[in-house]
Every structure is written in C-alpha cells, then in structure tokens.
Image (cartoon, rainbow, N blue to C red):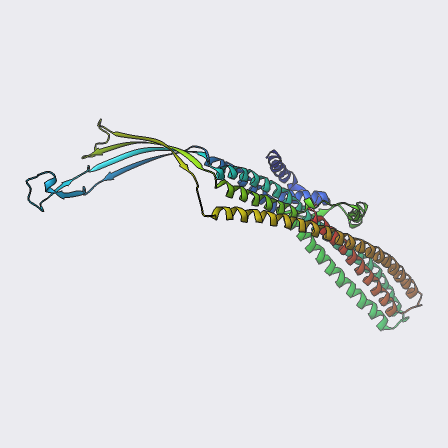
Length: 443
C-alpha cells in the first residue's frame, strides 16, 4: 500500500511539474504517459476501491448495532368475539361476548446488537479481499507497462515519420536544383521542352510526396499526444532521433535477452485466476463447517389510551440475548459435487498455465527470428539507399554534362525513392517486432 501511495503522490507531483514541459526523450514521454493517461488514473482508482473492499469484508465480522423506533395509533382497536359461557356459565347457548383488547397508542424503542462469532466463508472472504487488493496492485504495474508500450510505439511512429520527411527534403533539394538547371538549358535552346517538362513533373510529384509525409508526421504527433495524455493544443517536441533509438535497441538486442514468462500479462492473469479458483474451493469446503453468531436485543414499550408518552408513566422493558448455531448435516452429495467441480477448475487452470508457457516460448522464438530477419533486411535496404543515392547523384552530374537524358535521371530518382521507401518499411518492421516483444513480456 505504501508503494501505491507513493506512486499516487509521484503522479500528482509529476502532473504539476510537467505542465510546462514540451520536449521529451523516449523515457520522459513514457513517464509522462504513466503520470497522465486516463488508464493509469482508473487503475489507481481500482486499487483504492479494492482497499475499501477489504474493510467492507472485515466489517462483516465486527459488531453490527442498530436502533429502531415504532409508533402506532389504532384508529379502531381490534374487537375480539368469544363464547359468553367462558365468562358466564348461565349464558344461553350461542350467546357471545365482545370486548376490545389493546390500547389506542403504542410505542416501542428497540436496540439490537449482532456479532458473528465463527463462519468459515467469512474467514475465506477476508483472505480473498486482501488477495483482491494485491490483484489490483499488480494491475497497476500491468497498466503502467501497457501505457509505456503505447507511448513507445507512438514515439517510434514519430521518429519514422520524421526520418521520412528528412529523406524527402534531401531528394526535393536535389530535384529543385536539377529543375533550375534544366530550365536554363531549355531557355538557351540546349534541350527540348519535353525534357524540361519531365523534370518539372518529377519535381511536382516529389513536392506532393513530401506534403503527404508532413501530414503523416502531424498525425503521428497527435497520436503521441493522445497516448501521453498530452494537450492537443500545445506544441510537442521530441529530443531523440531514429538513429539513436535504433542504436540503443541494437546495442541491447532482444535476440540475446532471456525473457521470463512470468512477466507476461496473460500469464499473470492466469495465475491470478487460478488463485481465485482456489479461493472458491476453500469457500465451498468452508460450507461444511458450522457457523455461530450472537445477538442482544433490548426494547422499551409503552401503551397508552391517550397520547401522553412524555408523562411520568410506566414503560415495559424486554431484554433478550442469545446464540445462533447452524450446523450443516447432509446435502445429499450436492455440496461435495460443488467442491469437486471447483477443484477440477483449479486443475484446468494449471493446464492452461502450462499451455501458455509453451505458447510464450514459441512466440519468443518466432519474434526473435522475425527480429533477426527484419534487422538483416534493414541492413540490406540501408546499403541499397546508399547505392541508389550515389547512382542518382552521378546521374545528376552526367545530366549536367548532357551525357544522359532527363528521363533517365527521373528513372534514377524513382529508384532512389523506392530504395528510401523500402528502407523506411524495413525500419518499421524492425520496430514493430521490438514492440511485440516488449508487449509479450510486459516490458
């Protein structure tokens, strides 16, 4: 509980301190998301509700005290009819007597105390409520990892989008230079108009592609703001670049890491489900035990023919205390069947956990293989970008000397663009696999 209280204080403090922060590293963005995302706030509220549930369950076994007051005004006092011979032996057969019993006004004040002495289900409930609080505490940690993962993925998207814009900028600059030179050649009658128009067409297409890349970057930033719980109206900057993030990932390659399946959120929840089912077994077995409670009741009653309860007249007390004992004897096998069904559920949980461990092991091997493939592909595509860039730059030089046509330069440029696109896609594949590994083991 102290850890949760500390986390709540840190979150509140971080919210205050981060109000004016606008530049974030990856770690800072993740921490901001933990401190501001609504999922995290609800997770803390779930824990607080679980903590109150512990007290609610505890209170079942504590004394319950109540007081009750009643007042009655008999507009018509009940009339009793009896055989007259009960009071007058000389009365004729069939003769009856009538009389009214009771007073016009009646009031009573009652004080009750009930105390549970022993109940097996109550003891199980106490243990369960504490485990429930522990479950919600674990839920906070899982939510924290989930929020960090969402922020990390959004941050990666921004980095990739920024890289794409940078690449388009470099291509646009070189294309603009080539377009200016081509226009000069055309104006001096050195090339045909269609050659000049071809370069202009290519330039317009590059501008359109860059504009689309900028819009994708804006969308990526808005998604990052959403996952961080950051104000959409405020400016947001990131302090890391894609190369730094990739270097950090590759320096601590997930391929060489040994993951613990116990960190997987599904594994944790299955374990918690098994514990819940074990509590169900304990609760069903507890129904075999007797239960006992104690009670105490004291009441004061007054009967009046006139409304004068505040006069100094008699009140009649009634005081009772006692014990209540309930002993289950036989249920014709119904209860034992319930116990056995609950025990079967626990065995099924164990099988599910074993199956999940094997599944997680398979997924780990699969994702590590995919990561290696993505890394190999990214390395090749990076080399292809360098080659395509070199070939394109050489083509620009040849075009300036009139050695090749504008169409050939455009083809080289398309090759360069395709190489850049393949490289960006390879990076996204690598980051996607890394995110899946992080999610798989709740990191």
